[in-house]
Amino acid sequence: MTSEPLTDDGPIVARRGTVFSGDVDAAAGDVLVTARGGTLRGQRADGLTILRGVRYATAERFAPPVPERSWSDVREAREHGGVSPQPPTRSVATGGWSEVGVQSEDCLNLTVVTPAADGARRPVVVWLHGGSYRSGAGSWDRYRTDRLAREGDVVVVSVTYRLGALGYLRAPGLSPGNLGLLDQIEALRWVRDNAAHLGGDPENVTVIGQSSGAHSVACLLGVAQARPLFRRAVLQSPPLGLGLGGAATAGRVAERFLARLGRDPHDASLAEVVTAQRLAEKDLAARLRFGLAPAYGPVAGTDPLPDVRGWREACRAGAENLEVVLGTTHREIAYFLAGGPLSRRVPLVGRAAEDGLIGLATRRVFARPTMRFARQLAAAGARVFAYRIDGAGSTSPYRACHCSDLPLLFGDEAAWGQAPMLAGQSWAEVTDRSAPLRAAWLSFVARGADALAEHGWPAYAGRGGHIHHFA
Image (cartoon, rainbow, N blue to C red; front, side, top):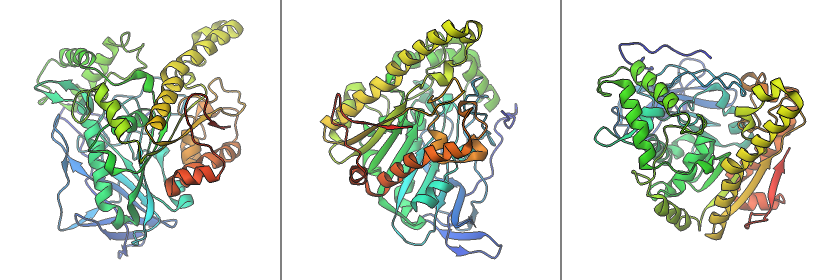
């Protein structure tokens, strides 16, 4: 994986900008759009208006986000904004390597893809990426949403938010914690205020998240100030077995981070902050399920999250008018464990033992907690639809592993075609497999539970209820 270097002098600041579509500018392909705060210059390409680096808020280090102010000039929205500073990705390359981009604390920005900023009231999708709360960005090529926008005639907004220590360090008197979650809420407010300018319907917003992005969506379902900002939700592979973070664990993480940093975090360079974050993760790996659980993430009882009991009550209270799709892949943990040293050294016995561990961990961290959450939401009045991705036959030891849903959703061969988890499948086969999932998601985004019911997908009513299977 390649990444922009972090200098000892501090952040590499991304070019600041914003994006939309409207009047065609003098330069071919450029478009001007009037948003709530001012005019933005984006690009028109292949029947879509694409807006990059749209700033929705600003934030000082370890401080809550502040909504972006209005501006008088034309803002550029043709280049990606900064991504949250992050360490090099873990050694797992199952899903292929990702670009990182220019790292900057000025990273609260959006990528917007819309068929047109024409006043139409299209469904709006807000995408929250995964990455264990330590890596990723809404602007990454592997999350390109052009196909979704075109196939579904929907507006798609991809969110970049703070990660790791900068987004989730909880150290009283220094950092309040849950800043990345506050960023997501501020982004949803921006979408509510600007959807109509983008050709979207602010009353028809669906939040879709995967992995830690799906975990974020689950958190937001229990945050009273967030619930009015979206109508529907799709949770792909939420690691709900990890639960919500607690003050004791967050305190240990903060202690190790500060010890590794060895200086005032407000004065430290970005390189120093990211290095201290990575070393603290390494120190705590054994306590964090051998490094598979994120060290930094949402903490219950810290604004905007209630304590665990309050979160559950808020989820129930907000369920009556909620429509949800949620599910997992068949072999989630294979993303992290398949093809490990045991199966390489003792192929037959080792593979069997490895598969047993993968199945056990998948059930404990993903499948069972997800279905439990589905039952709780359904019992409280939500219309819930459950699914599982079983995967196609493959020479890959990963098969239907964590993240194997992403190529199906985004359908971008350039970004996903060489991913090891897809070994043994042609891209034509992946495309065939992706069509039913994308059609289901887009139908749900447009018309909700009724659309899935019309396609013969029964709602999930509780234990033993219907789970829709994708190949």
